[in-house]
View 1: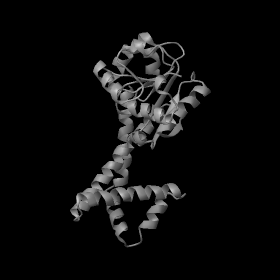
View 2 (view 1 turned 180 degrees about the horizontal axis):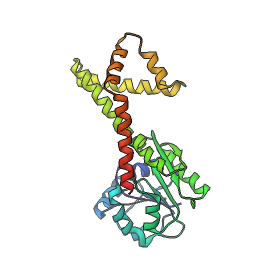
View 3 (view 1 turned 90 degrees about the horizontal axis):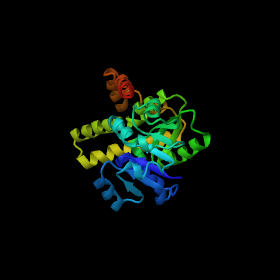
View 4 (view 1 turned 90 degrees about the vertical axis):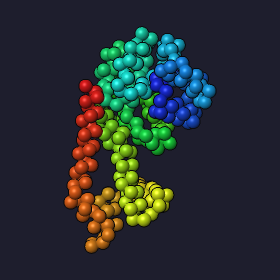
Amino acid sequence: MNILILGGGNMGLTYAQSFLRSRIVPPANLSVLCRTYEKANLLSQTHEGRFFSDPQHCVPQADLLILSVKPQDSGRLFEQIRDFVQPGQVFISIMAGVRMETISKALKVDKVIRAMPNLPAQIGAGVTAFTSTDQVTRIELVMVQNLLNTTGKTLYVEREQMIDASTAISGSGPAYVYFFMNAMMEAAQQMGFSESEAELLVSQTFTGALDLYNQAGLSCENWIGKVASKGGTTEAALRVFRETALHEDIVAGANAALKRATELGS
């Protein structure tokens, strides 16, 4: 199976490195299409695989093509490759908001998979929601899921609108976590800790809390109850969060991300 990644950016290279590291794809069967000859030449000197800048030299030979460019660049990419697309090729898109129907019409293809990975995929700890058109066979879906699993965990969803929802939750989610961590680090420094001390306290707190959550079958509310004793320090902080409607603001922010993902698709 020949795999072509269209786009040599962060996520495109993340997939390339994950596929090669897992030995699920040999270097000779992995290609990357870059925007310029200079970029292709540079990457060929530092990465395994084959790198191209001209679609006619790599698109027709591919069995599976991964569309890994920014959503706003999708139109240019479609124009660049449509004349070289072959019958039976399978396309995976990780472009936020771009509908499968849009891809099918633009490239005149029927086997389209839409996926939404997130940033931790770079270290094999990501989560990817994905769905597909009806023409994608079960064998092809299993093959694609095995590839996506090299970057973390996967979740197949039946309805395409759930990909937009996963964009708002898991796709954008790491930024929400970093936003909260940054606020806690700032508070720690205001209390007198150095920057490095604040980073250690906050990062290890998040890591430990998540490990506890994953190792036991308790809900977030259960864990909150174990930390927050009546009249204690944690309760004082939670009271402020509730008074300032922080919970509702987080939900509203995620819904704003969903709205934007939907807008990108239209």
